[in-house]
Length: 532
Image 1: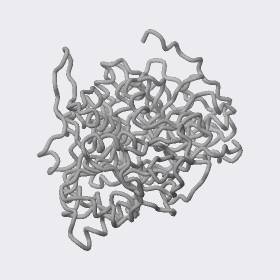
Image 2: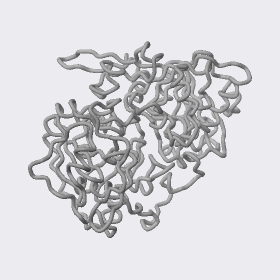
Image 3: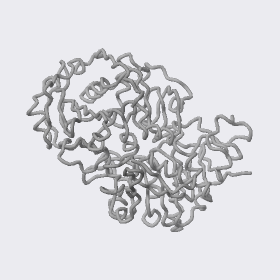
Image 4: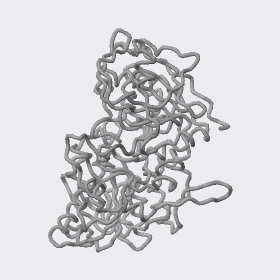
């Protein structure tokens, strides 16, 4: 069978009212040529209309030139359930999908990425939906926003709370896709798919199963096509019987604005000397202090932001390989990459599918999560998913809620205030100008991690900033360390909207982290994991 069709022919297969499942993580693995063709068909024909999209991580970059913005047209898009959304600095125009969300032109939901993958697996197996405790006490909980991002979504709930077996659970009914739009590197003539140039596998197999098992179709965008029988069976990640149509795009980017780089897909291993160290400054101070929370042999999840620099700290300290990094897009080990390649890792030990990685995270199988924060409130709850009058500056929760739900230890990293001018050197920190926005507040605008639930689950939670370290104890934020050169009252307590407690044994942060040379980091001994 010749399954190869043009992008325009693929777009013609989409019917009014269809549910599309789109595999991507921002620009990583995005089937952009197909999405572009669907948007172009709507512009010329006014069809398809009233689509729903399922985006387990995100489809599209911060520039709005690829991904979901091709579909972000009033009339075309009716409903979107996404783990995250395009985001970027305020200097860039608002992505079209965010304009629709802000103007209430689309029913928009932010559902944790792992739960969205679970919804696909349940749809594929014809199970009713997902029963989970991930998201209790957060914006995911129907007692709060119930994942809704605007009024149109709030009027049509996607989650409800159920009491089962003596406990409260969140229940997400499965959503059945009519069409799965996925991406790979290579397809043979029958439609077997391999991923040798991709930075991640993501959840293409689960999305294809959900569509195919329910009478839908699967469209795969690929970079190239080869003769039948020339792909190694062990390399095939999505088999031919699940793939209905192929669209060829020889120019597809590896990730956002990134042509093919064999290091991203693990085809070559880079010398460690090629990884640039983090530049000197207050961000590096935070990353260094966060690194001190790790134990030898730990499996450590990394989030976007300052936390993503911690692997460079270990490399600089001669400790590369002393912990195993695990990322939601599927990379295990190696050196997690930054910038547009975030979500990938060079020199990885393995690249697993995202749904399996999220099962690992949701069950708390790893040791430590290093994550960022936008706000922290009086209960130790954290907001990373929505902030202020410009929500498009944030991406939503992604896998943050899945990761933090049952993590043993969580280290949140960020600046104490936003916009401060800081100087680091001579073993101390100086504040040249205080930030205008306080980040430790009475009540977080959006709760992405619930400090109250975390305390009930006996999670160990720390907050590392450039000027102090805090821990969550008995429902309160307690300052345990303070940076050299910082005044406790003026620079810490007075710069928080919410009262902070001070530990009786308050101690200085290590002076070595405030000096440019390597700090002589020694990781803690690995903890005992059995009998949790």
